[in-house]
Length: 602
Image 1 (cartoon, rainbow, N blue to C red):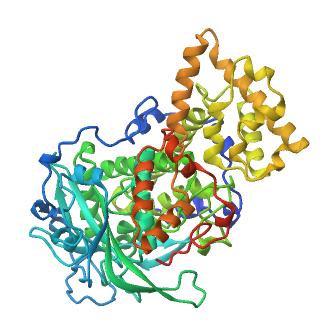
Image 2 (image 1 turned 180 degrees about the vertical axis):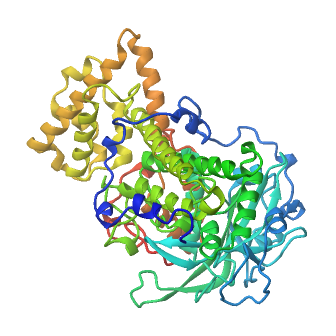
Image 3 (image 1 turned 120 degrees about the vertical axis):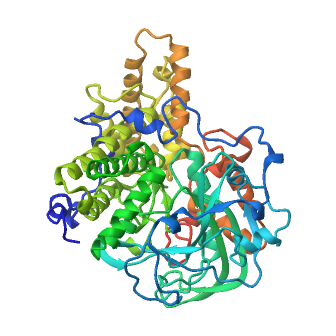
């Protein structure tokens, strides 16, 4: 990949030294240029300040829903783009193609385990009447409906900073594009549907544990207000899949499953990278033109200047996406360029996790345990690194280095502005920028790392800190005690850390009071708490909760997963009947497989 921006790599590379220098959340609001409104970006990603969190329609018209087998499908991706001339479904290098036509491999006994009703309503299809009927056959890969033209996409990517060559859909097969009642197109993709020419030495299957995690997290992220792919269904295959979970030479047979993923498009950075790497410039242009016409039509007819504007928009969406990840404490775990969506969606839920104890260098991925390239604190810089790789791939179309540099700058501006607003909301401040705000934040993030502190519970707990005269009457222990649930140890109440924490809280209260000014205090407090509640979820999909759902389902009990799904549809609500699902990670889960860290083996 040498054309166009060969020297851009060295200019914006995130090298090993940078990887050892983690992002500091408190420093990202200082001296931020703002040519673009962060509010604009948030509005276009469903979380503008003051708007409601996405939720299930109150009264869906179930009578208008169709049976899955009666749905209408189209195949614009297949129709518009060059396909693989070969038809043999064997691992091989593919050239001059964006996809390979290949069907799912049937399984022994497909059975529907879970159905996301809101996604069904989005698509205009009804919940299947039987867990083992025709719909399960479709969603398990045993039946292809009229109008479907299944395929596996070809793409490459940089994995852990190194070009990996051809990757592609090695176990995901797109069935087609479903046309919803409102005229929108939604790709339905089966993950774990069998071998494709991109499977290399793998079997094309997925195990239940990874499928449950993807099914749950896709929906949990949506209700958190984070741009994401969705999940329609989870199907057991009735077959075993052998996996070495921790690559330690102990493979075991596990239950197989298939998850049906839903998105407007599953095109990734890597789809363009593989074409540029092999100088397949006609296919590169056709793919870019297709994506712009289908998913960015407001930009106009493709041209070099439009390609540049399109890249800017990709950078904007990616900046907003990563800011949301940081807001909720989400760690993707494997931010390779083939796992980056061209639409700015969270895609490919593998060894992900949420921060338990606040740690900028934490990663849930055991494969990344030594280098920590994809740790929580590195995610913004890695996103920019990945965008630089995409810029290199698109350089032959744009032909203007400065235009691509401008796109990369837009990513920085977008992320910084969005993160600054989100931090202000999390803290219940009108805005950041007062004298002393930088030190207030720096001291906060230092405190959070000195003693193991749950990020989700700490920021949610700030809503309980009084900002009126009541705070002045509380002793240090009583004030800090309002946040007791967030701490993994009582060490925080020892004299020195207690003094530091209480001192910070009193400075924080004083800072909040600067925003009150002449405003009526009760009204100010009410509005402030509403903003904080929208920015700070009470419930997130902690790894140990997902693991409990997996273990129950392996024993035939779906109730744990279904309860968790229902609660995660309202992550910002109190839901007191489910309060224990908001608890910090229990000690038994600290080092338990599946609860603390995960591998890419799934």
